[in-house]
Length: 452
Image 1: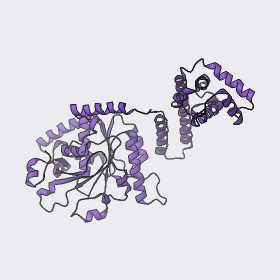
Image 2 (image 1 turned 90 degrees about the horizontal axis):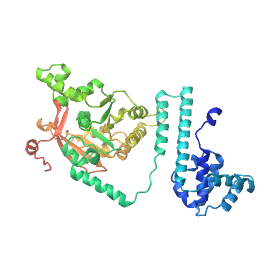
Image 3 (image 1 turned 180 degrees about the horizontal axis):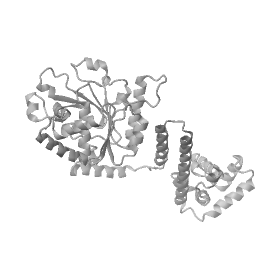
Image 4 (image 1 turned 90 degrees about the vertical axis):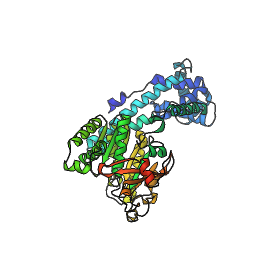
């Protein structure tokens, strides 16, 4: 360890040059402070000197030689004035001018990042050698440490409103020339619904709730397949209830328009086989990834998603089957679900993709089938509604016993931070496990008004 410490990356010259530049021209302090912090300095005396300069700046005191020397002695950086003066002279002689202060600061900051990487890998090694934790948690620790360092390395300056206005107009021009996925967010593939949602945006947590048997899994799979085919981005599906094969069977049934019952029984005509061949060929060209781990945790989910390149959408089926990070203890299920929903929102923000999560409704909502679902019906936790950027309910239970109307579904956008709320009526083709935009003839027959 001692040998490793001696080899830690740092630059004495760069650290001295930063401090020397500030002594020569105190006005450059603010430029330097945007790049480095006290902890970025490796040598302890340099940390203490920069800390004093920082305090002076915060108190609007001029950083000059006399006041700096006095403070260095009073704070015990050096034992006496002569010792402090001798080192300040060394610092001042290292750099001829403050012109390159920001370049020196960048070197100091970069060396600090390298040291943090070394410290992180040491901690990862220590935890791995002890074998005292679950392997998945150790992997998550390793990835989190690296992500934290990478995230903290990003620095943003103030943006003047005129710069933002230029970008805003560029965005508006993009929309005028023709809406794109980047401009509007990821489209579901259902035109009427997209008009209401205005896209599934990066970092969004989208909750899809419905009573059992309404088709929320099929709804999510229809959107996932559409996104994968249209955007060429990766779509990751976590299926906690069904196996990979069951899920793919549903996807191929809806894409090929082959009866799902016939598909399960293998009772397929020549025409069905041809449809399946075409659909399979198209789907094999997409990047749809399915994980059917039962009771997956946030830690495991996050670790898997971080390795996926060109990620576009995440689907989780369904929330209440996920496992909390800490099993047992006195945490009730409501708190556990709240912790999981917050974790899913963090994953969406961290990875910069929409995360669509299916959710059960409370039992009371399942009994009251004469009304559409409401936000209060989300099962196990009010924090689900709070964490979600969008909440979408599917309902086809309250249309009555008319067989034709059983194939009409209300998609209720109950919460939408980035667009409007409202109801979109769609067709449900149960034999194909497929949703589709309602055609005008059907809408007219049932007195449903469609937007022009």
